[in-house]
Length: 174
Image (tube, rainbow, N blue to C red; front, side):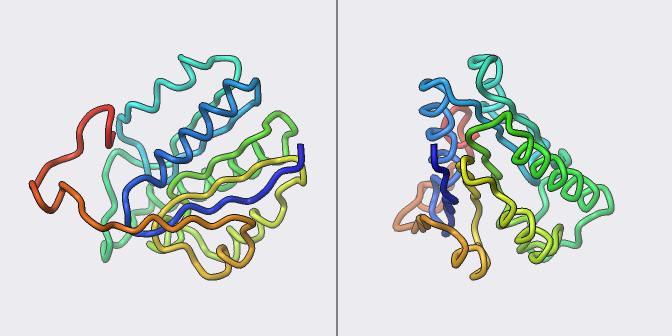
């Protein structure tokens, strides 16, 4: 298989959901998938994917239980988790064990200053030709957009978080 670099960005809902859908599709076709979740150390429903697809999906979280917000200074623990995550992501991508690599919330990790954009670009450029790489998150740097083969921007038109003040629902948003 000839791989590509897909980038899902924008302020609308659905970036991680689209990447997870691709992971399930790939797993159902027998492909090996690695999912690295940056900035996530909380319990999300998708953490059950490796149990449901034990032969095909591997998943790791590179974050702390605390959600980092815009304008907030990252802790040393947040910075170390992101750095370790980038190393693990690169190792998985270069290992030859995986057909699909998903770097969930990598764009936001760079935007919030947990990782240096140039360091991440160096890793993205090392993608082997036979690996499908998917990067998600708001605020994709222009250099990521330029490097990507496919860019999808999710645009929020209307969201029940705002219209109904609804919180994340298990199985739908988390």
